[in-house]
Length: 493
Image (cartoon, rainbow, N blue to C red; front, top):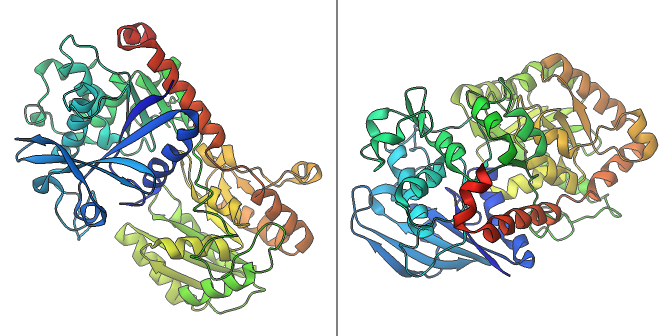
């Protein structure tokens, strides 16, 4: 029997994207359709989202949604069924979904995303006549209050099971306790068994507390967040609920990320015809300001420029990396201090370090198609998608052995090479010294073209799609749907 699911999420490709969350939320529903799972995604009506809607039908009105009237719009984009909250007082503004044009968080973010969660709960409880899902699935802190609203607003009514997915535990949505009344939650919610978190309100904590099942985006990350260090203050709660935690690896949409059909790159290629990558390499070098040379080893980095992603380690390792004769191309945006440090590196090493501060989809594809090796020295990484794109495009990933990076890249050590299964280079712990060691290993592999091509082709034939993971999500949804609302508490017990 088909199962209907409401996905509550703050961004969704192709309508709005700041990172991997949008890619996951936009691709997984397409792969669940063959499994008999119908996903409808609920997203805020940001200015950029409303501008991209081909058409939309208003299916519900809210007289007062956290300070103003709002409409719920229904539409379809690229095979995705979408509900959009048209609330100008909350979402009609410049900047990103989360920050203004000066990269500062919107001060009313707790209200903006409480509204997203509250609408998700209202739909789940059948208060929107046009649609009532069997499962409600909330993503990250922005939707973290959804399971809490379902719990407190059910008032004895049957409620649908709730799933909470942690895409990155580092972002938790912590706010002052004085907001409780504005959020429309009862006083009893401010307890250790409610949404209270170190004296404040924890959006992600609420999701972990009240969801019936918790998923993370890789098996390794599911283990890491139950530890003192990896749990970032929530490890105890995750350990208490470990029987309800499931790590399901992210996948990618291979129709979007396919070097043999990709119109965003300079030259198409595939596993058996890999030489056209050289054309993409020259195009990438030109775009980021590097000396054009198809024979030089080119390390790429496409990432948020933050401490988590280890960008500082890459900058510290530049003298050794460049000392191998390699180049480094950097694409991304993030912390202003890190952006300045990247620009300083370009000035210090003209023609050998190139960068584009910012991100666009075309350049992201070109990086995967043109760089020889992709640097991912993250200090922690829930899953990561860029290494999956890299594998698909014959760009050898160089990864810290953490989270989903550990789950998705097979280190091309001597034993793996003998078995013909290596797909990249791993290093641990994530330090400058170990990154430098990994870079030297990559440079050594680069000097052996036949071996390099074998590793490339191993990666390119790796299944990085959603197929296996979609089956796991489908099994989870069916389990919850078959249990029904009356058995949910029994399931948690």
